[in-house]
Image (cartoon, rainbow, N blue to C red; front, side, top):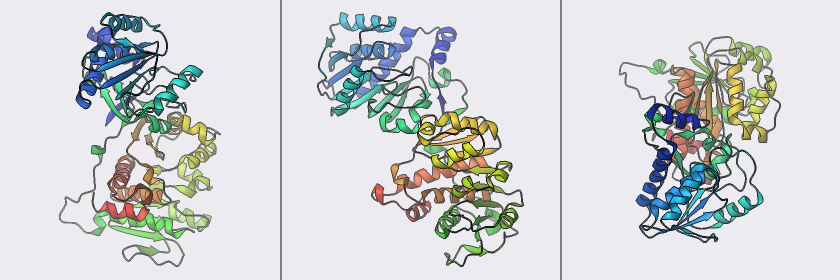
Length: 463
């Protein structure tokens, strides 16, 4: 896991005050890190265009141009004349060694965006929009300095933001890089040190970025076991049998010893999936909501929930009266997509917003929910999945557009339910299931548009 921060100005200040590092030293390290990246990736004499703004982001770009000068064909395009003291200083340094300025945005091998940094909050002006539109049409490899210009501090993006192939961010990771809308703009993300390693530069944070290596699979190390050792997941089977069946198949494949669908419908199930009219007595975890509809009466649902088992809830539960009881329960995992989450926010009197407002401020609203319901694990689906419990939050950025297919969420619920049945704590079950889910999609070798829930389930065996 890697730490995430809203902003890092206070971490820079800590370097000045505690470690005796000046702003100039940090900037030189930032520029040197960018130069090292370019030297490792591109041959000497490649053409480099560095587009600079008036603040310290522009200063980083000016410093970079000086470091690459002579080894590369470097040109500086000044979008806005230097205003910050560091920008003025770096401009003088670049001018002193005769780094070339240009008034043209010609295509180059490498295009460096050093226009706006992490402090950008407003809207792009007409001139900035025009420049960004031109840069985005160029064919050169695009690198953003610290953060793509046009990306706001809350992660909201202007539609004309710079579209980077790589973002070289300074000191530590910023949350704004992992908002859903930012995924179109950030490209690959690499953190550069600023004169001290990240272990020294960073402090504790309640927000973490999940790495693929954080996945812990439910391997069976104990030899003297039986099917009951690995739990029994019982799923409420509703009107749309296919949804709960997908969840059940995923749960069984992911290690649950027993899986049952509970409900009155006549159904043809895979041989290994059991069916029961009532909740089996040896149940260890519950799953409900997937295709549930109105198949259960209030009395039947009360009977299904009259226990203290861990539970994963999805889909239909966010529009049903039973939600009130689920919110009072412990050891619960909710897995809404954005539309379901805004319904949940409204039901809990936290906010009455539309999807656009949610997507702009996903971090804010998941924090609001987890503050009010500190015992519930919330997984908010999206291009970047956010998982929260109480005051701790985790982002899984490894998902792909191939998962945008009906039934993918049912598979995820089955994975979470499987781990709950096997005894995983709700947060651990959710994190590991989410990482497994995104890895399944990544491992699939077919065309990205062709991935189906059954393909995901088949990939579980290859993890």
